[in-house]
Length: 449
Image (tube, rainbow, N blue to C red; front, top):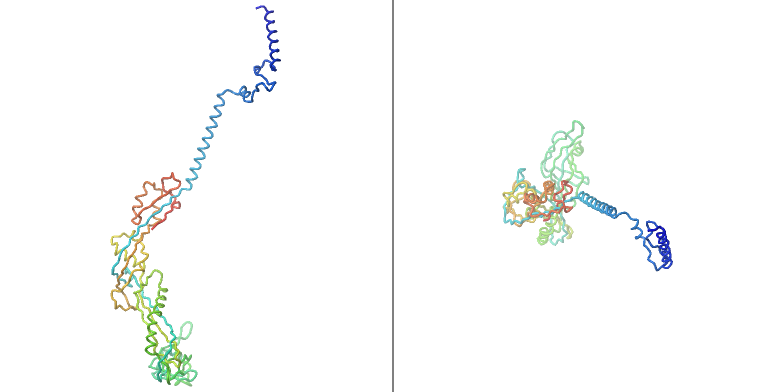
């Protein structure tokens, strides 16, 4: 094409573009990579947004997809790390809580006979327990009597005079510091004194005896501190052979006095058999050593009412003395004997687990109803009647040791080895653990009866 024609066409094209641009309010940018973009000159014309520009300058799509994949992978790894951390931390707090239901069984005893002895090799050991007591009861006396009675009491004679024995015949006179005279009731011999070879201290010889007032009447009633033998007066023996009272001198009376009548004595006997006896039993029960049992029928009760009262006044205090003689059984021995008699084939390990908490409620009776209880009693046969409850107490520490590190699937045989376990439940934390902890301190076992 001729060069002139080509140039004319270009000139016309430029002019046309300028006219069009003026008519529609658009500027034509210079030829650049963005030359095809229309720039806003009026509100009626479309405005390119930031995203449109961004797309024009953005990197290829394949690079944006790679960054997204890396970000997703990072999030997944963080989640896994958190889960592993939680898993590890919870495993640090692993625990096993086990609840065991223990066996219990009741047995009836009907006059089941047992034998107890003081022998060291006896299956059931017993001890004697004798508890004395004394009480006074206010009483109004109604019966009188004309009497002439001499007071009586007990003394101890001392010999500091010689290393040789000193014989004191019956009827020897003694006098107290007030001049009242008493007579010895029997002949006695006072041993000679002894001297310690190292300390050189002297120990006087002594002997006990009873004396009677020389005259009847209340004037002789009392507790004189010192008595001397009147025949030794004025001699060296007077201060070296002497007496002291060991009981009050009492019972002296003369003239019309009040005495204990049959009616008063009957009332005092009722009191002794009820209140006085109950108080004595309570006193005895409080004195039972730990580990022993005192059964209600395992004692003898006796009492004495002082009916020798002679009073110038109808209001009198009557002395009642009593004693409770009993046998007390060693509880562990009795429990073992009862268990073995009812479960003859029991093993020693199972026997050690069984407790009998209520054997003290059994009814006790001596086989020999006429048995007299005293300190010389060596062996006793008795019967027991009632219900004995056996409660098994599995060894918690042994059970923990046997369960350490055991899979839950292998626990049942271990529980079955203990005859005292009826059922058991096991809870392990955290839930995904299937083994009992190897650390015994992380195993908790509770027993339910």
